[in-house]
Amino acid sequence: MKTYPTLLASFLLAAVTLGNVAAYAASADPNKPVGAYFSPESAKSSADVTSKLTGHWQSEQDATYKLTIKGKQFLESHSGEAMPDQTFEYQAHCKSFDAAVKSCLLVKGQSDATYYAIVNNDAEHLELSIIGGTGNTLKFKRIPSSPVAAVTKGCKAVQFKKGELAAVVEGTTAEGKTDCYTVKTGANQTMTAELIGNSDDIKNTAITIPGIGDVRDTFQFKTEKKTYEIHISQIKGVAEKKPYGLNITVY
Image (tube, rainbow, N blue to C red):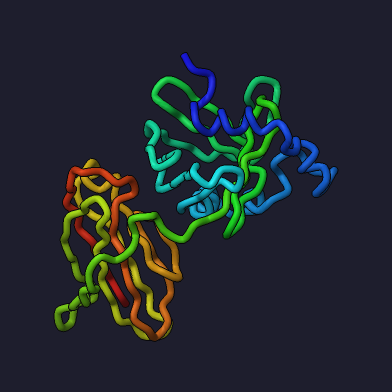
């Protein structure tokens, strides 16, 4: 049985020149325990932390290593090759070996499970370190969209029937293809966009709304008076096509 998830752990264990998590935390505020000084600690709920984690990330140490976090999925790739799927749970407190920290992730593979301290997570940066490991930190920068997220055709305007606030559109994902829809909104309205359909069909499908966020199953936000684009694409490029539904409401 493996002790650590193969890809992420190998980077952390190899990064012998990087700073120790405890030293990093102490330099920020010596009165707070490891993992307690940064943004996740002050979050209102685990959902707030997960929201910050959601998206596409690229290693600052190795540009060919990328990480995508969507829902409970923790998806790694290296040099364009997807690694075995993993899931994660956010925990406010956790312990591995003799180390205990606040704000951490439990990442689960098919035959292993590993705790990672969230050293830092803001809008553009993510830093993780194995709890009970060498203390090395892997640093990521956010990348705005997946490599396949370029719109391949013109966007389709979503039409709402008279008197209705919701509309459903349907499509099919394909490798290297992104569907694009547009929605016109007024100022200070509430807009939602949600993937619907069989869970197995849509687990590799994600919504991106430029300027709002990416790699999500669901969005809800206050609008400006403008036209928003909604992009639908695969998370990992696979040959198999899958159907999806997109439910959009504006009120």
